[in-house]
Image 1 (cartoon, rainbow, N blue to C red):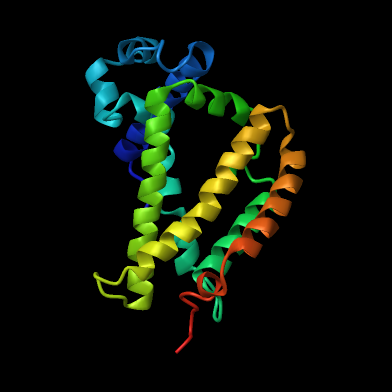
Image 2 (image 1 turned 135 degrees about the vertical axis):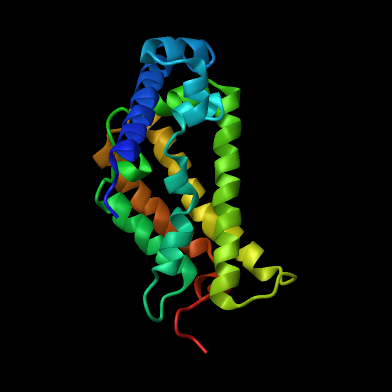
Amino acid sequence: MAEGLRERKKRQTRQYISDVATGLFLERGFEAVTVAEVADASDVSVNTVYNYFPAKEDLFLDRSKGVVDRLSRWVRGRGEGESAARAVLRELREEVESVSPRIGLMDGYARFMGVIHSSPALRSRLWAIGQEVQDNLERTLREETGAPDDDPVPSLMAGQVNWLHGTVMAAIGRRLMAGGKPAEVSRDILVLLDEMEELLSEKVLNYAVRGAE
């Protein structure tokens, strides 16, 4: 269905508030900026800010929803004969090779990560997002394999596969904050992915193969 005028206006307002907040956080740091200051700079009320963003952290990490279901989307979209882990490895390599901003390979991401690293609240929220990614992936693996709730294997596999994603994202952030350029970091991460794949057992690499008996 086409987006209605009301929905479009709400989306634009939400994006505007987020953009204003991000600019303030990048300039002054997350802890130094209050929600009231964000509201004032956005020319809206504090209540309006909270209507769109339940917590202050959501103002800065406003695109986390797309990250939370990323691994599940990749696993559900795996090809015939492809396992869950190999699907994630393939998708990560494609993102890295294309120097994709979706995984932080862009100018300005170092500043973004710098704000997170300087804020205990944002670091805590980033950790919580990582847990959501893993929990979401575990549910997906149970659905895809038909594993019962008391089977520990989907949880163990989700941890292994999520390790790939989390390690890559952390490495990208560290290298960019150390002064690396996106294209240079991309080449380093491709090597890292090869090394990580070698550390995975055959059981992990061959779990949840699409079309397997």
